[in-house]
Length: 163
Length: 309
Image (cartoon, rainbow over all chains, first blue to last red):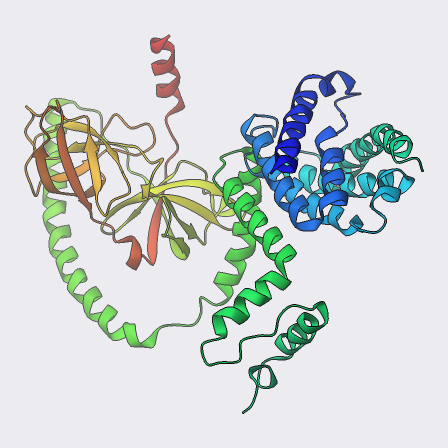
C-alpha cells in the first residue's frame, strides 16, 4: 500500500514537471517526455502489466488535463502501448544494472520512438505532413531528446546503486 | 476419460503445457471447469489482456472525439470498408424480393394517385402564386444512393452511402428517403459518404407542425422516438400532426416530411410541451435514399451573421 502511495505521489510530481518545467526545454516545438521516462522506470521495476496499466492511466490523465492536445484517448493509447513495450526490459535479476546502465537510455529511446511514432501518426492525420514526415520531423527528434534526458536519471541510478 | 486439452485446438494444448511449466496449478478437470480454464488462460496471457483492454478503451475514447484528425481517419476507414461492403452488395436476398415487390406495387399505386393530385395542386399553386406575385420555390436535384453500411447501435447513429465527392456530394447536404427526412451528410470520401441520421445525439433540425405552422427544434434524446423542443404549451399541437422541415433551417430545404406527432403532453412546471415524433423513415429497413444536391445559402448565412453582430 505504501509503495502504491509513493508511486502515485511521484507520478503527480512528474505531472507537475511535465506540465510546468518541460515546456521551457522545448526546442522548435520538440520537447522531451519526462512522463515516458518515469513509465520506463515503472516498467523496469514493476513489469509489463503494471507499466501498461500505468501508461494508460498516465496517458488518460494527460488527455483529460489538456496535455494530449485535445484528442482524448490518444495519449492513453500511446502510453499504454509504450508501457507494454518498455515491459520487455523488465528483468528481476538485473533490474538495478539496467536502471544504472546505458540499457535504460536504450529502453527509453526505443519506447519513446514507439510512443511518438504512434502518437504523431494519429495526431498529424488530416494535415499536409505525411507518415514519413511525421516520423522524421517529429517522432525521431522527440525520441532522441527524451533519450538524452534519460541520461540524467541513469547517472543518478548508477551512483545510487554503486555500479 | 479424455482430458479436455486432448480434443482442444493446438493453441489451447500449448497453453496448458506452458501453464504447467510456469508452475500454475493444474486445471480443474471436472465438467464445470470451463470457467476456471478461461480464467487460467486470462491469467497466463494477462499482459496481452491488459494491453488489449487499454487499447480498446483508448480507441473508444478517440472515436468519440470530433477532431479533424479523427474525421480524416474515419474517412479513410469509411473508404476501405465501403469497398468491402460494396463488393458483397451484389448478393441479393431472394427471400425478401417477393415481399418487397408487393410492397413496391402497393406503393407505386399510392404514389401514382398522389402524383396526379399533386399535379393538380401544383398547377393551382402556380396559378395562385402568379396572382400574388410570389417568388417561385427552388426545385432541387436529387442524387440516388444505396445504403452500404449502417451504424445504428450507438448514440451517434450513422449510415454509409455509395456516393461521394466524385458524384458531387458534399458535407451538409440533406438526405431523404421516400418516407421522409433521413439526415445530413457529415463526411465524404471520393466514393462514399457518411450520413448523420435523425437518431444522432448531435442532430438538430429546425422543424414545424404542418397544420398549425408551429415552429420547434427536432432533437433525439436517445429514446425510440424524436422530440420537438421549444414549443410553448399554449401552442396548437395534436397527436397525428405532420412535422416538416421549416424555412428557418440553413441546411434543410423547407417542407421535407419528417414524421408525425405520436404523443403530446404537458410536464408539471414546464413551460414547454413534451412532443414525441415518430419519424417516417425507418432506419433499420433503409436501403435506398436520395441526397438533395443543396448547399446552404451562404449569402443568407452571412447576412444573418452580420445582423447578429
